[in-house]
Length: 423
Image (cartoon, rainbow, N blue to C red; front, side, top):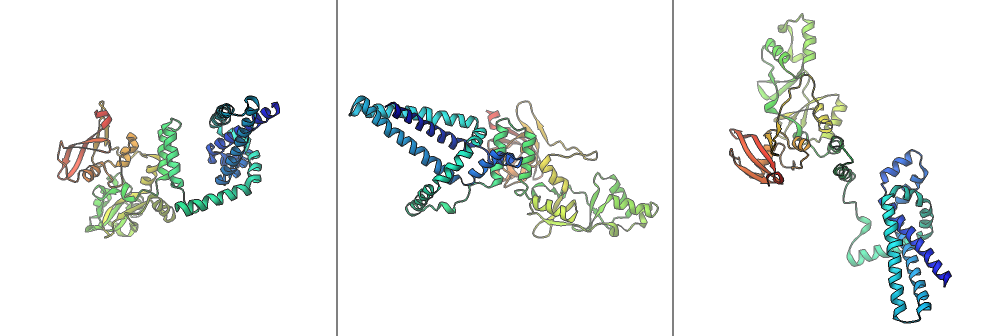
């Protein structure tokens, strides 16, 4: 009986080993293991190799765990029958004792320890588990084939054709948000990483400077007026049009103009503006930021004019605009700071209508949707299905919007209050 009892305890230790190994190997981060592997850590390399085929690994662990648990339960039943004789009491005591032993010492305790030290325990058990998985591989393959066939024929579920529900980008975004919410990542770092991951999801239309805000010059204007306008501008590149603003014929760079003026003795009338202007670079409004960033690097251009499907000028986008989507606003000594968001002491926020939803979300750490509209005024018009009047209020997406000012049909000022603050 003593030998049987000791053997049962040994089986419970094996069960605890399998339970802890399963939790540690599934909870450990493959990214961290890969990072350690690149630094030469052989134990991390073993974990990475083992977790490449999770189905086979988990199958082997479950097979071993169930085998030792069932064998321990059978031996315990025999032991209690020897102690208390045949009957219901022996079976009941055996069931209660083994359930408590397995639950506490072979399941909860090793799993709790594995969660607390997932990486270290995973690297500790990986060499042993690789040998166990290799030994049990034939049996696991048979079990896996039976499972796949049953799921396919009985339930119509083809697990071999299933893909991950989330892409790698979505998984990274989720991990970043989780670390930020848990206080392990600063908001600035979260915004930078998320901005880089979202370049494929944002088009140039979402960040472009609208055509009504573009400084443009008629190429037929007297040269002296063009020179004065360029020198007075805060921008180094000025689009030139021929009579019609949609007919852009070039882009005048301030440096090219100054070089040309120097060559002719600073006499504007001797400068041919058309000749020194660069060819305009047009891009469709549906171009993603990642595509446009790659195009800027290939063409060595930093300035593009955005057009729609009819060839009409919609706005302009620069390399700086794209970089600002990643690192936030980049202001130099010539930038004019535009105040568009003003926080109030009561929790409300005063917002200019042309502030983009993305900028507002980034500044206030909100999550207003930006799929249907670019600016905050556009979002209110889209959700309200109307051109709102001053003092009109709307509530959607967990916020209350009050129209404070408008110019003709353009909403110019809003008051936004999170509904939790309003309550």
